[in-house]
Length: 292
Image (tube, rainbow, N blue to C red; front, side, top):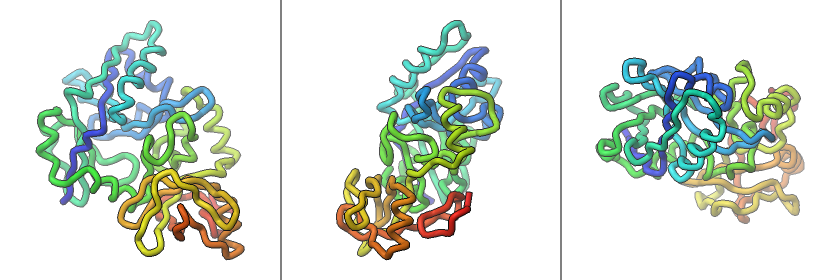
């Protein structure tokens, strides 16, 4: 029953009577689908549709204010708070970085802890990831039964990427980071920053580059950020890896061509076999065309 303290995660709180409308007009997920028992995966994008920050959105119960809490990489929490502040204008909201007073913990293959621990939810990206909780910083150590690396090995086994690790902020579209596959974009909600570009990619099916999982030959994984190739052709670059598995940001069409011609795909020179998780819905390299 693993559980970890994700000490690299921070928290930004958005509170006030306009908090819901304010956030809903900015981020990719629908705040109508967020409650004290249901979090949502989302992102704040550039106007050009690229990911500036990705996060999990929690909501506190109404009896303690009903504010929204964004679980984000801690190093980016001050920048996220500042960026949201730019959009405040006359909205009745307060934006605060609470990373020093709140901590993020996660667990899997075990029941969720009691609500008295803090805000506790199923991970909104994928049920197999387990549960996620926001707790008082001084209580976070109680959940650190395993090192944080155990959680990252778990998500890599499942094929789930993480911003700032498997792709650079400001450089990737939501489809490339699999946000459309992991409940990170609600396509039936109203407008938000970058929405036009993301909707166009969805409707036209123009995401040629995506993060995909791979299994390394011999169990020796490539380093982070090295080239993925097939013969002389560059497919992309590696993301994080653990236990002989890794995530790769690659051109799907080039990988598909390589597989059809029998070329070996290599990452940092190490042969790697692409492996499709059951939750991925787009046409994977080596499959027949036409899947959505």
